[in-house]
Image (cartoon, rainbow, N blue to C red):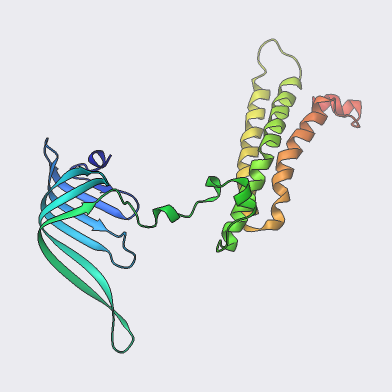
Length: 237
């Protein structure tokens, strides 16, 4: 995988904190004109420049062996007066090895967003989750639970559009067009409701209103719109 990622003349990202650039790459896999930026160590990014290099496979994963280069690292140094200063550390080398398997030291602790979590995690998030993310979790949980209801409502809407209106042997495209417009509008409305509900828990019931109301109105229309005078009902159809 590392061999496929490292392409000549391209800044290739290996994980979120490691970027590798190689000017040329021959048929044997030898790299030349290499630049590496390694930010996996928090607060101490490293930049490596090397003349040549080669990808090797080890039991621990792929590594890049670099030859004739320079390693530059920015370090934070505590001063006697208590302030923190930045210091550039430069090291020249004839051979150095870079681990590509460890894409990020904290990769296992990556924060998972709402779409990656289970319902239990959405309703009961771990400690340390911000209030903003808790709102997103609740909105995602309610949208998942209301999803089947939304599907039924939209199906009833399609039936209401198809079964109402005057029968025509040819044509009838106007009803389908109106139905498509209504469906697109409801989908856009659902996205907007999800966004505002993530910001304010008081608006979470709107998710269920959006899921239920189209189905109830469509079922009422399919059943003949009871309670509406016949003249108005015929005009509506």
